[in-house]
Length: 420
Image 1 (cartoon, rainbow, N blue to C red):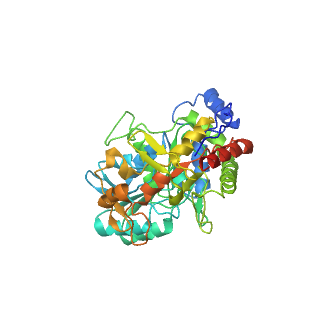
Image 2 (tube, helix red, strand yellow):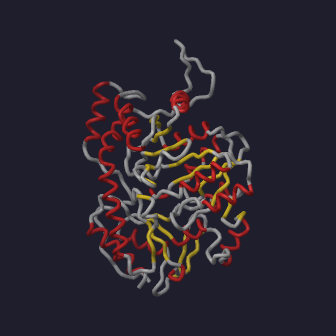
Image 3 (cartoon, rainbow, N blue to C red):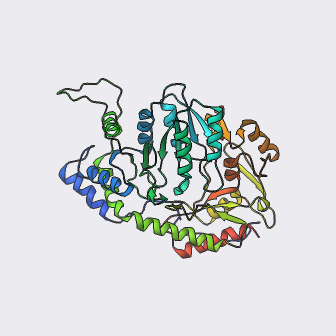
C-alpha cells in the first residue's frame, strides 16, 4: 500500500516532452529571413528527403499532422461509405477516426501479448467473419513494431491493402527494415510528444509516384494545373508549414540519439523494477528494434489490487503487497511526474461501442462483457479480450529523455513503495 512520502520534483518530469537542440531555431530563422513562411520551402524539401532516406522509400509528402496523412491514406485505399475496415484496437483514436472521415466502418482486431499490437490470429479470424474487407489499418504501439510479416501475409492472402500507422514508431525497425515502409500506404507523426517533433506535423510515405502526386494535389486543395484556381475534386488544406518543417529539420539528425536515450530509460526501469511482480512492454529482440518511445509496465494478475474505472474516473482498494495502475499513477503524480494509462482500446470507447470487435476466438462483444463481470478466458487460459486486460493492468511510465537517472531512481522507488 502506497504510504511513503517522497520529495516532489521542483520541475515536473513529463511523460515525453520535446527535446530541442538549437539547430531547429536556425532553420526557423532561415524560413523567416528568406520569406518562405507558408507551405513551400527548403525545410519541407529537406525533411521529405531525409524521411525517405531514413525509412527507405521513394516519396514523402510533409503534412500538417499525422492524422492528415492517415486521412490521405484512407482516400488512397479507396474506402467508401459503409465499407468495413479492420483496425488496431489498442491505439490512439487518430488511427481510426480517418476511416470514419471517409464513411468507413471500423472493425477492431484484438491485441496480442507478445508486442501489444494487432494479433495475427485474430486478424485471420476476422477475415473468416468479414470476408469482404479489403483494408487493414495497423499501428505500432509505443514504438514497438507489430508482427508485420504475418499480418502482410494474411492481407495478401485475402487481397487486402495495409495502411501502416507508424506515428509512434519512427526509427524503429523490424527484421532490419524501418517501420513506415511495410504498408501500401504509410504514415509517421511529428506531434509534440513524439521522438522527433515539429510541435506538429506528419508525413505520408510511399513508393508509388502516382500516390505521391495524388496526396500532394489533394493536400493543397486539389488545385488543377491552370492559370486560375481550377478544382475538379475535393481538396484539403493539409500541407505542412515551412516553419514547422524547420523544427523537424533541426530534429532529424538527433533521431538515433533520442532512441538511445529512450532505450536507456527502458533498461533502467527494467533493472530497477525486476524484483516487482511486473513486466515491461515487450518486444521480440530477434526480429525488432523498437524506438522505445514510451516505457510501460504491466502488473501481473495475482499482484493486482481491486480497481474499477468509470468513463472518466477510477477507484482502487489498497492491499498489502499488491497495487494497480491507478495507485501507481497517483503516486507518481504526487512527486510531480507524469504517467498515463495505456491507450483505452477502441472497442471500449463510447463512440465505437457498437462496432465489431474480433478476438482470436471469434466475435468478442459478448465475451468482453463476460470478462468485465467475471474474467472470461479462452482455451489457453488467457483473457479473451487481451487489449482490455492490458489496459486494466498496464500504465505508461515517465519516459522523457531529459529525465536524469537520479529522477528515474526516485520514480522507481515510488513504484516499489506501492507494493509494500
